[in-house]
Image 1: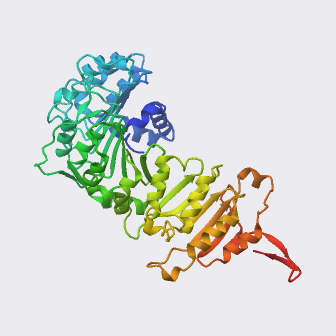
Image 2: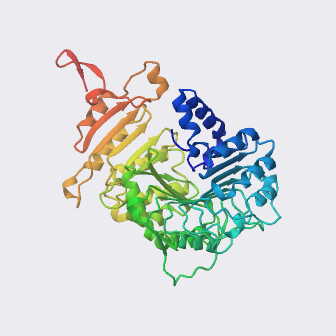
Image 3: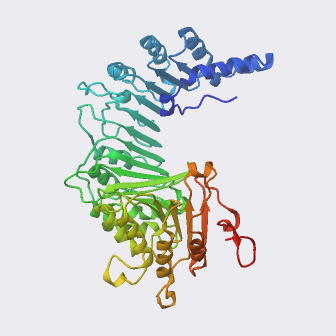
Amino acid sequence: MSLLPLDLDGHGFYSSDPCPKYLSCLHSLRYVCTAWRDLVDGTPYLWNVACAALPMAVNSAMLAKSGQSLVVVHASEEAPTLDEFMGLAIRHRSRWGAIALQLPNGYIGSVARYLADPAPRLQKITLSLGPENAPWTGPGINLLGGQAQNIRDLNIYAAPIQWLPNAFAGLRSLKLTFIETHTGGGLPAQSIVDILACSPTLETLDLFGTEVIPTTIDTGSPRSHLPLLTSLRLELMSAMGADCILRRITVEPKIMTRLAISLNLDEADFDPSRFLSETLAPFASVYEQLNKRCGGSKLALDPIGKFVWTGQYEERYSFILSLKIKVPDAILWLEQAVGVGGPGVFLPLHLDGLTSEGAAQAFTALQGRGVVTEISVYTGSSIPGLDMILDAISGRAGPRSDLAARPGFPALHTITLFNWAWNLEKLEKALKGRFFNQEAMDSPLTDLLIKILYPTSLYMKGIKRIPRFRTAQRIRRIKGVRGMRIENGLGEYAIRGMLAVVWCEVSSSVTWG
């Protein structure tokens, strides 16, 4: 048995109300035996929840049993008598420990009344007032009368808040989703910067879809150091606003588990090259650490010139950087962020999209760099796209004339071909060109693993034909090719790298390659 935690966060907004289930568990415990019933009834903090989904008589009884312990208040839009319920909860305002309100936009005025006065022991506010049917033009919610310095966790969704100076300090978590000020405009970046300066214990900063207005930041003052910050998310927001925030904070790379920066694409005054070289320079080491923890990353060749670099390891570590900048202009920063000797970048290539101007420029720029370690080539009908890839592998083409004789992607160790009908003769020629005369190179190329994937539908039908088997055998024998593996669409592959069982005319016996 344990007390209902004070972490009724936003997850409760998208699932069933947790309070009735909790109450059901309490009553189940009471029916175990007389001793358990007496223990449950005599433990005040087990009854410290007030929930609008429960009958008023039940809430009154639970609050009476809770003694002087902190109270968790929870109300959602299903509540038929919200004012009556909140009237009961407000009588215990001095014991509020956490409050979670999920209500339609029309309840803004009511919520402003519920949260107008100080609650000295309140540590967590989770407030959802959306989605909006129309822009709110009335006064914003003045949380706790401006006396919210004891709040440690603030999670606001689509609620118009009055962001008063020095209203918050010592936050552990700040999550703002689709936030506008009570005037209907964006949230000044200086307001966020001031909160961060007063919250050195902050662990989570999450701004999603929140319009942050760029403001003049005092660059002469020291940056706010956030030594406990583990998760930083700035997504679907103004690039200039994000720039103002990132320029005012520093973090500890070794403890970061999530760094997500995804900015609006079109802002006339935003210089993405300066953003990378100056604003994100202190965060390159964070990306390097997360790239290692994720075991590598993925870079998308976007046809419109958008830079999208991502990585994830289960639910523990993740990162994303998405902004409108051409990959060639971001190469140097990417190399610094990947780091020397760290896991490289996975590059998925689609033949039909590779010949677009943006993707072709990015592909060409990446050839001469050592950041890409794995390439996958998806099926397509573009012959020029196929030729670009084979030329890069062999070294018949390069991003600069002095690289024309040197194969591209020098750190490449794996190529995955999502098509069992690939032209293996062309691939064989490209691989021979890649590994020809390695001894004359300044630095040797990485040995390559070639993987060919069957379409799952063919594999499930029992079609396991390997086209051009003799060519596949020759590819395996090329010095520099460390293996050739045939997989099905489910990721299964033949043991010991076996390609197929065949009849050997020389030995007059069954063999395999």
